Amino acid sequence: MTNTLNLFIGLAMGLNLLALASSRLPSVIRAAAVQGMVLGLLPLLIEKEFHWMVWLVAVGTIVVKGFIIPNLLRRALRAANIDREVQPLIGFVPSLLLGAAATIGAVALADGLPLLPEHAGSLLVPGSFATVFAGFLLLIGRTKAISQVCGYLILENGIYLFGLLLINSTPLLVEAGILLDLTVAVFVIGIIMDRIQKEFDSLDTNKLTSLRE
Image (cartoon, rainbow, N blue to C red; front, top):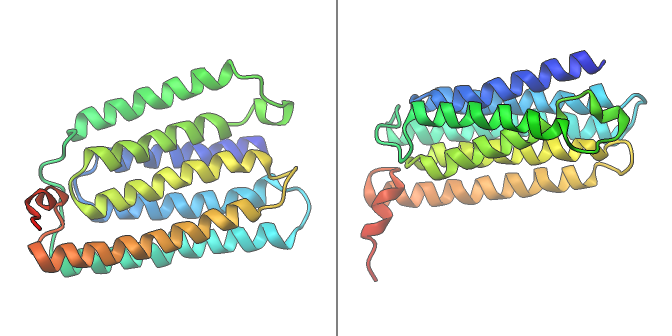
């Protein structure tokens, strides 16, 4: 079971690097969506006994992160008529190298942490650290609002992944609350993107500096 769990987490970590290296916004959205679906399956692999809350959160995570939010982002992408991130604040190659270095560092750091025996052989901790860093890097290194929303999604995926460490000792109400907060936040960000698009005919957040009272 641990090997299967690590395989899924390794796939999620690979999707971090794909999102950091891609200049095409549809690819970034797709990476965030697939990562959300992959992480949605993890509670079912970790929890050994059937629990309705686990299944509810797993299904909710897959539906919201894998389908609803990506579809909203694709609609915003079509409305804005953009396809690529042209001038990121942090280039794609440096972003990829930083993400790869963070992934290696997270694995090395996790080896030195006093983890519980059931978590010692898994990639939950390094995967969560690497995913949070990748999401943060997208947030600060991209100028398109859609890329930044994807960064927020990936960052939250890292927090969600870290929360799975407590799946056997606490109910998944925290994860359910995070999922609800994420949904609300993305809808608010969607409204902001719509306002930016109407005002500036662009989703480049750098243009917000031209706002005046």
